[in-house]
Length: 236
Picture (cartoon, rainbow, N blue to C red):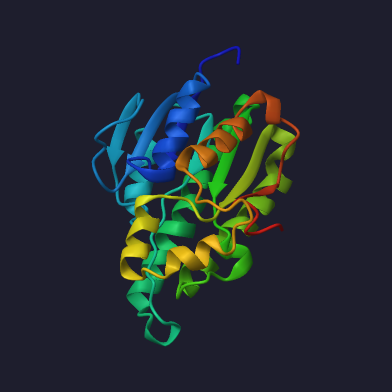
C-alpha cells in the first residue's frame, strides 16, 4: 500500500470487529473504531461510543470523521426469540443496527470515496443470510440477507468509481455474542460443530484477515462477492 489509508470499523470494541481492526492496522491502515460500548483495547487512531441504531447519531458520526477509505460494517444485534414472540421493538432494533446503519454509513461515505477514485466497503453479514439461522433468529437472518443484497447493489453501481463492495458471511465464530448464545443454550455448540466440516469454531482473526485482504489493493478485482468464513458450514 503506497499511502496510509483510514478504515472505519463498527462494532470494534470486541469480537470480530476488534479482530478486523487489528488486521487492518497490520496492513498499515489507520483505524477509527465505533461501538455502543467503550473501547478498552485495540490499535485505534480514535474511537467513538455511538448507538448506530439512532440515525441522527449516524449522521453526527459521519460529520466528525476524517476522510474514510475503508468502511467495515460489522456492528450487529441479535435477539434470539421464537418467531411468534418477536416484538416490534426487537425487530426494529435489529433492522436499525444490522441494516439501516450500514446503509446510512455507506450513503454518507461512498460519495467522497468515489471522488477520490478509490474505496472499499466490507459488510459483515452471516451464514444466517443463507441458512435462515439454526436458532430462533428470524429478524437477524433477514437483516443479514438484506445486507448481502445491499452489498450487491452498491458493488454494481459504484465499481466504475474505483470502489469495491463485498460481504463476508461468518459462521461458527468464537465471539462474545456466540458465547452468550451457548450460555443460553448449552446444546447449541454441539449443533454448530456438527455443521462445520473442519471440526472447530473459528476465531475473530479468521474473519479479520479476509476483511483486511478485501480492503487491500490486491483485491481490486473482487467486487460484489459474498465470501463464506464458516469452515464449510455454508458453501454458497
